[in-house]
Image 1 (cartoon, rainbow, N blue to C red):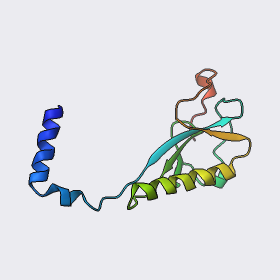
Image 2 (tube, rainbow, N blue to C red):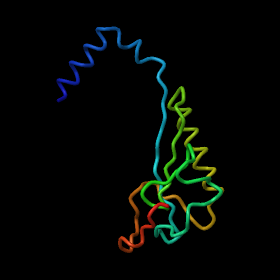
Image 3 (cartoon, rainbow, N blue to C red):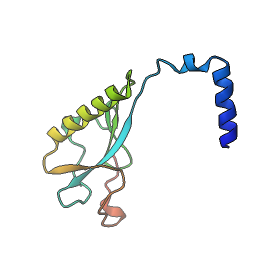
Length: 120
């Protein structure tokens, strides 16, 4: 598989590929769980201050009401995309009351499947 990818990349470069790849943009998607201070999954609804969970362009939910998905727009550099992601997360933290953001989408404490609130 590696040799096939290498051959395709070589063919792209031979056909003037580097110019095709210049000027691209970077967008990021990051998931974080809202958790209570004891590390359990937040049982509260999606905070209204974050906008509509299923239609907001940058802050949505995934399979769980507590699983936030941060989406940056396509930006001209990875640095700009990371700064945008940082700003999104900062905004969310300002809206959360007694909750934290767990860095990944896999929870640290689960009290059975019923403790995972399904997204609405």
